[in-house]
Length: 391
Image (cartoon, rainbow, N blue to C red; front, top):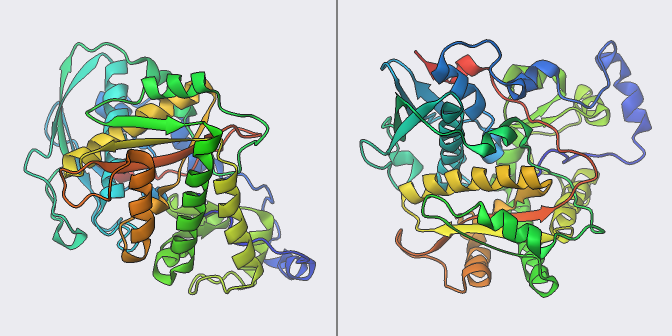
């Protein structure tokens, strides 16, 4: 979901002028600082094949760009994957489900990048048992242990790893997504026991567009959930380079507003304010311009959640090769109490089943809008490779 453009002022010339001095001498480009997105250049001259693979894996999609991965390389010829317990979303992701989907995406990119080097990955998911049902019960047990051995066929999706970006803008409503394109996308999506579905049919789009917009409003108008986004917002080159995670904003106007202390990160946008209007319009636009939808479903065990992430990143890589944008609309699948009616509606619309009650019940793990953008989606910041490595 696009949380990057909460603030946009109309008639803000006075504020911009007041902020000229604080940002004088800085580039006014809205592009992210080059160093913040250097991960998308690949591992460069890194000689260690495990670190090379991790360098590709850190480009994986993940909720709120938390980048919660930790890899331990102290055991020879093994990569052990853990989660960082400080990088969680207790309000929008109270059970850590979305977080583990992000770990699954990391794991799949890791396997693909190892195969590119001729290394087969023997993956053991949850080698010490699954994490608890609630974030407060999580301990330091590994998510996966990956043992390396020679001999692996290259995966053709590797060619798209560094090209894969999530589009967080409105889609072009003059360019429909064809049924053939949807079929090609779904053909590459059913992996690791996860089932894929989707629609580009006009009659099927409207109820799902409504679901996106209605559920987005719940997240945006619930103070504790929207504040998870606000607190993770990084404004301007200095903050973006300092953190290289979260929700990065580098537009000149927002930097000007922030420079004079008018970018409020302690409270939700006030109803009726320009920030509020822009925030709501952004998500309504995302919902209404969806030219198709795709979803991934399976069980809801911790293993299923990791596998959903592995399937999802393959779907996004496939979409990248097709020139198609895939943007998760995760709000309706969030498990906080206020979202319950939309969570139930999502399962009825996509699976024709009630909301799951047990880990064995069919569960929609990913729900995404499809479409084409006017310009390529930009790369998002990533922390340095060594920030993820324990060696």
